[in-house]
Each structure stands twice: as structure tokens, then as C-alpha cells.
Image (cartoon, rainbow, N blue to C red; front, side, top):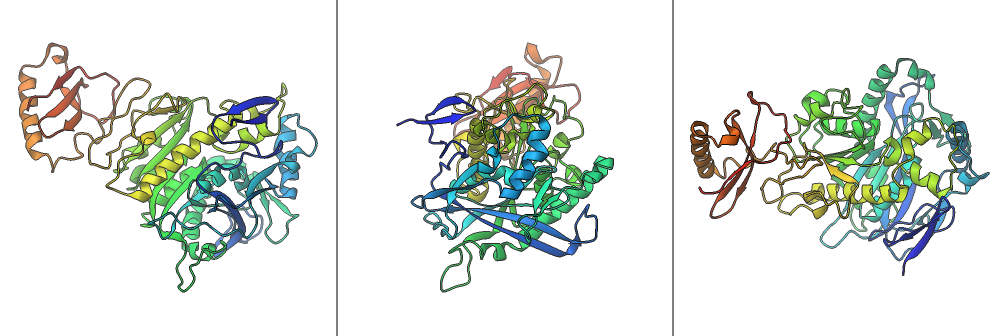
Length: 504
């Protein structure tokens, strides 16, 4: 039976099970599990809060989304705490000229398991849940990602989101539920300096939360196993995730070399700090908005994307989300659709950063790809890549493009190939990936290339060739060759293969 959900006055027939629980509700989770929520705070007395008007310890607001039994009934809970809803309405929606019914944001709800619902038992064969740490965008509350993160929890992750006062636009004081702390906008006077300070603080936040995972696990109902002191969370293998500067900090945390971090995902955030030149050695997912790829886009300079890419000797995906704006990587587009927002003629910047890709479709895509990416990180070697990451599928995910710099060795040690808009594949690891295992084949390849240099095919006489892909089988080795510039560089070119050799 197809469920019907009314969003923004338009009826959508959803073949997938994402649906609205009520007219003012965000979509219910659709994964194997339900989702529960615990809200708390952490204080780091060893650090001072950046941008605080008076000296004070670094404070973090924390939301823990965790899997629950699917049988646990979800109930509608406030999407924003009441005082935060009022402040968000005044700070963003009214200021942007949006026409919304009175108190709509206060009525907005999210279906989650009832308070104190026990965490579900990990899947068979696992003793603990994979854990993700999430940090939001510049001057953005963590609450604006609750639907995305609850859906990731439903897919089988414990997701711990955190933000802080003064560098978040709105922050609810843990000691006083009516006190909404505003961000310190005076820091914008020197924005780049502000960003660097904020970035450094957020990287340290990731490490601080990592160090406090055991205490956070104790807050999740039924997380500690009876009879021993073990936690239901995997605290030794953790993924980091974030949006905008939060994504930069997630990558920066991986750049610290902390062995607990096994993968990191950056949702449309620049790469900052020394990670740009030093990189890191864990799998990386970079998801950018439309028009932001490795060779073009208004943000191609200054983001550090291409620079850091050369310093990541691990699997790395660069995906582009078509029709997406910067805040398509949050709940904001979906929230506005659910509320039935009417766009006025003067909506300021809000429309420019949200109005494009359907909010529900964006949610589906992010949960699918982010979930699959971290699944490969936690499974480790010996497993084939999931179909969603193995190659582009324009039938099921037409909005997602694989950039030519995506570079992955599949779990059997063979180079994975990717097709971009330009029909290119990435040679990044193809030649170097399995040199030792295939010494005999590579010696033969060298012999063939030497001969090719003396008597090249007509189409390659003006330029030396480059091996684009090697495919090893029991009986032969396949080479695809493309023209290359006069000097050897690591830059990728979009020429299709012009010669195939398969007789070694």
C-alpha cells in the first residue's frame, strides 16, 4: 500500500516507506530499527570557550541518537525545544521574509521512541554498535539535523551530535531550558580568523567527545551489559561526520592520527588547517553541492579539496549532489516543506541555500550514501563494496555524480572504476595498487610499453601513453591506454581510452 504525505501543499506518493507521521511532523525513520534520543551536555574545564564574552569553560550540547527495537512505538516529540523554536523562528524564518502559519515551528514534531526506551541489541555477530560523531555547520544548531541523524540511527548507528554556545547561532542553556544563548556575531569582523579559531576548537571537540564515549554510553538506556562493565558502543573504532565547518573539523580530527577514527565524511565543507597539506590515512567521503567538483565550481579555490586529496592514501569518494545547495545537507529544506512554506519575493539568502532538491529525496540520498560509506569503514577488508559505492547508478540515484578523482581499491584488491559526467575513470591507484602481487605482469607491461614507445599506434604518436586501468585475470592482463601530456603529472584527464592490449 502506497502511503500519501502532504508536503508544502503538494501530495507526494512515496513508493519508499518514508512518510509523514502527522501534518506537522518530520518523516518517520525507515530503517531496520526505530530511533531513540538522549540529550545531555559535556563541559571541558581544560579549555576556554572561543568567542565567549567572559572567560568560561568549553561547553558542548550533545544529542545521542540510537537504534531501538522496531516494535517500540514512536511518538511525536518537539523537533525543537520550545524556547529554541521561538528563537529560530525570529532569527531565521521571519528575518528571511518567509510566510508561515503562526506557531508552526513550535508545533513541528519528530517521531522518536519514547523516553527511556532501551537501545536495541546489536545485529547477530556484533557485540557493540558502530558509533558516529557529528558536528554541524557554521553558526548552525545541531537540532537542525535531527531527522537526518535519527534516520542514520535507524540504519544501525549510534550518532552523537554536538555543538557549543557562542559559535552556534542558537544554543539552549543546559542549566536553564528557557535561556537561549545567541552566537557571538562580533566574531564576523575578521571572518577568516574566526573560522580558523572555530575550526581548531571543533577538532578538539571531536577528540574530547571520543575521550568521553564511555560516560555518554552510560546515558543510553540498557547500553551497559549486565554482569560486566562493557558498553554497547564501539569506542575503539569510530567514524567522524560533519556539515560545512563541521565536516572540515571531522576531517581534521582524522588528521590528528587518532587510531580510534576509522573513517570520515565531509558534507560540503572546506578542508582547513594542516590537514590540507598532511592529509590522513582513513577512508574519506566528500559530498559537495551541485557544480562543486574537482575541476570547476565557485568554491574550487580556497576549499583545500584538491590539495588534501593528494595526501589521502586510502579509499576516497568525491560525490556531487545535483540540484543541491549548501543547506541541502541538513534538515532545513525538508523542514520548510513540511511546514508548507510560501516563498516571498524577498527571502534573502535562505532560499538560495535551500530551495532546490526535494527535502525528502535529499534525506534518502544522504542516508543511503553516508550509511553505506561508514558500513565499509566498519566492515573492513575482505568484503566487496556495496553497489551504491562500487559504481555510479544513474537509474536509482540520478542526482549523484562520482567525481573523476574518486579513487578506491575494492575489497578484493582490484582497482574500482568510476564513470563521471565526462565518462572518465580514475587512474589514481590503478597502477600502484597491487605492484608487489603482480610483479610478473608489470614487468611484461613495462616491456610492452617500451615497445609501444618505439612503435606507438598512430593516435598516440604525439604523446607518451598512460596506463589508465589494469585488470588482472588468471589468463591475461588488460590495459586501457589514454593520451597523456608531455610532462608526467598526477592530474587527471578526461580522454576516453584509445587502445586496449590484452595479450600478455
